[in-house]
Length: 271
Length: 263
Image (cartoon, rainbow over all chains, first blue to last red; front, side, top):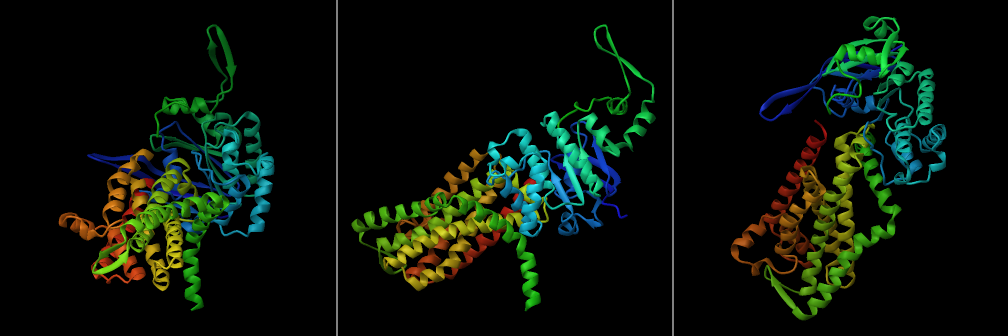
């Protein structure tokens, strides 16, 4: 089976006045196979957003290539993006449209048949619990609903590669589980997903492999279980959660992250 | 022919898609659209054309004598290209780029950022042209403007609105906050509107101001529109100045906005 997303030696640096360029991402290489959910983990400022902006063709890389379904996203952007769905970290919903119109409008950008778009939009809205809001303006939606709509919009063209930048931020536990279910179903259909997240549980539960990114460089890449076994081991960890209260638990990705970077996932600067 | 048409259609299709997105929004609230596009220039027309025009009588410019109403009708055609083009592009595109972030959203689909910006500019120019056409139509119906000349002026109105839309997009790309767009509005757009010959012939200004004004794009557009609609003499310099600003502004605005969004 062909690789869905291939990143070859990706480097991105930003010019700075009177200073040497700032290298945000350095020599990143990895592949995402069809049906794989690939996690991108790193604290704020690690280079996740820069990586995603390069993967989705918005920022040109300083060096390296990004191939989507075999098409270089910077040399053949139209062919590559025909297979790509993107949910940005920032809210990019088009507030001039209502929920359903928004989905349909974005479907037309992929040159899809209108009948097919409406059908798919309704299915996605139904799955994500937004069908009752299909005629609502975006401004009438809660933060969680907006986030779900943005994910739904990214899926409108049934992409082969889905890039999600912190899609569950601001979602309540129920909505998060609905989204996880959707991603799991899409995985079965062969969709390759690149997921950037802060949530350990989400990464451990969903991701087949995880790339740990820190200061623009890849620290490690493996399955969640292998990362934990390699860096922490399998021994039960005992920690004092309140003065005098000790708690025993299994090692997790947060421990791996702390060991490799000295920082927790929610810490770090702003990218 | 079919092959070339297909290639053209293929290349233009994404821009058309973006343009249709704006048209869809415009038509969704058509009452608001009509009011903002047509009412303002019509009010200017009635007030200056009929009100002030009845007091002033005839004016002479470029060796041609016309009624003040005719003079100012043609002036308002160019003014509407300036106002509708500039304000839609400056404030509208700033909102779309900075607050809504829809340039980025559209550019993450098979439509490229370059095509998104073309769609934006062409829509802004379309809106300016609609407004200018309303005045051309009124002027033709009232017998103040040459009807055939008015028809021939439409492409120039579109290009003029494209020029001022590009100026607006450029200012949006340079502004860090939406308030900063007020600077070019007060320091460039309003002086152009007041001193480029919309309300009075340039010949009445001191020579230095006349020279400065003759290099500004609104003066050039006014000259071309009055040439077509009032049979003023054709000035090749005006056409050259107009085309120079048009090419420069379209290039600079797209380049600056792309640099702002893509790092």
